[in-house]
Length: 264
Image 1 (cartoon, rainbow, N blue to C red):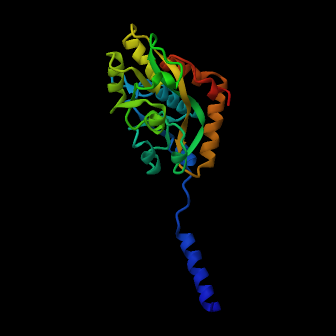
Image 2 (image 1 turned 180 degrees about the horizontal axis):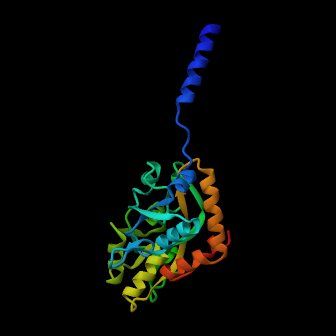
Image 3 (image 1 turned 180 degrees about the vertical axis):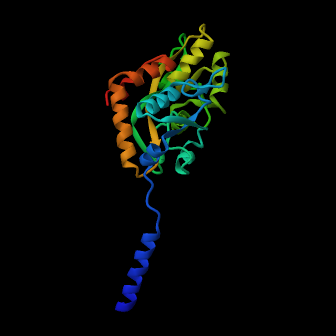
């Protein structure tokens, strides 16, 4: 290459790099603003919901409130839905996501996660009188799931091999109605939702029969924010050890954070 052209190319690249905006430091922005913006879905009880006076309540809500209080910040909830949690983070509308966000390889490609602050036990559940101890007991039966959930995806892969079918509903509320009314032989959902089914129809006494997996629930943040991630991890570690996060979870979910999470 011509030396003159080479020098000109280097100069162009240097100018271009100098013109690029510096990577934002989310932790500094939060501290300067004095406010923490948290994306939380208020339509997924008991993690996030609105009470009779339209005040946010739930385990994720109290987790965010505790975080803001410990950091001496005002708290602003960015109401979201499942599909908009990550976009709200990527566009800078929210600083972090605390909203039953399970850690998956696909999500980890576009955002970062803290260590788990809670867990979600995914189970096969049925009335107490229904005998289900392994997959053989579900051959020829329909398992009720909420469409598009991790349970739906997980069970779809093995349906033909294991001999069960899936009965899909569009949301958790409809799944609960089907179970409570006796229309569902078995459901695949979170242990928390099973507790709600049991409360609504104690006679059926829905209970977990098999555990599918335990999902890590973590705080989501933008990529390349090491200072914020470290500070959040330190906060989670402290509040796991002192029992505050477990107390919040048990208050709303009716059971402790899964031991698999607490032992990490």
